[in-house]
Amino acid sequence: MSHIVVLGSTNMDLVTFVEKAPQRGETVTGREFRTIPGGKGANQAVAAARAGATVSMIGAVGNDAFGTRLRSTLEQAGVDTGRLRTTEGDSGTAHVVVDDDGGNAIVVIPAANGTVDHLTPGDEELIASADALLLQLEIPLGAVLAGALTARAHGVRTILTPAPAQPLPVDLLNATDLLLPNEHEVATLTGRTDPRTAALALLDEVPEVVVTLGAAGCLYAARDAEPLTVPAPEVTAVDTTGAGDTFAGTLAVALAEGRPMPDALAWAAAASALSVQRPGASESMPHRPEIDAQYTS
Ligand code: ADP
View 1 (cartoon, helix red, strand yellow):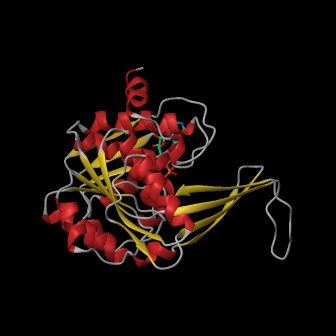
View 2 (spheres, protein in one colour):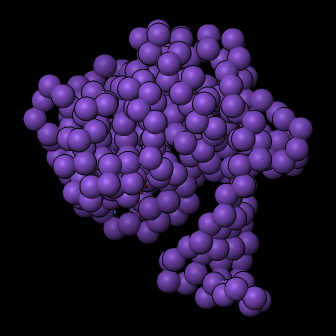
């Protein structure tokens, strides 16, 4: 089995469902409230574990009730949490208001995730032993860079999802093997709205770029190959939350298993298409047999 390490965030999503979101100063009565384990790091870890890899998560939860649940959710998915630290204080939270038109507004409080600002020797050892390292931007940038440099020093492939969208320092891009932005993130990174132009521009800093394009699939660009578009299976989407994290986790597994890039991208697209047909983020992520069935169909 391939070994994937995820260095990133865990958040409890506090989701309120309401007909119409309140304006400033207004109070409204909502319909439903749910607490849903999430965070881009944890979501990518669950996706990779369900896709059949051995997965270890480096990050932090608080010593509150949310932290206990975030840890056990990862463990139930089969993710090794030996290097998921428990810190004094709150776990990360995302406060989400979803209205009946499907629009949402989100406030993220990093809390414990903000303490992941360095790597311990044990973290570095774990990264060095991996087949691939998955990174996102919901923990301090210094730790993301340290993770990428550790991976680079040991020949471990680094896959970075640049979310939340922000311009990135060149040294982080240069330490990344595969950059995996969505359309919005690639525009923020490059100032270019055309994904193909943006991806080609990024090749100055990163050897491989995959831009995910929602229902339109994805675009792959590399220094030594012609750009390639991989379509997404045509499905009826009910909830696209976590589609990008499903794509990242499953792509990492396929590449770690040595599958060629076009194959790996089609397999990740199959997995993501399954996830958008079900509600939720990590709970909608498919297991390996389902992905294989969708991939061959
Ligand atoms: P993010 O979730 O980060 O915004 P995207 O919306 O680009 O990322 O989705 C990631 C991947 O999920 C896409 O490349 C595609 O393979 C798959 N996907 C997303 N939306 C759909 C959809 N409506 N139908 C089929 N696949 C989808």
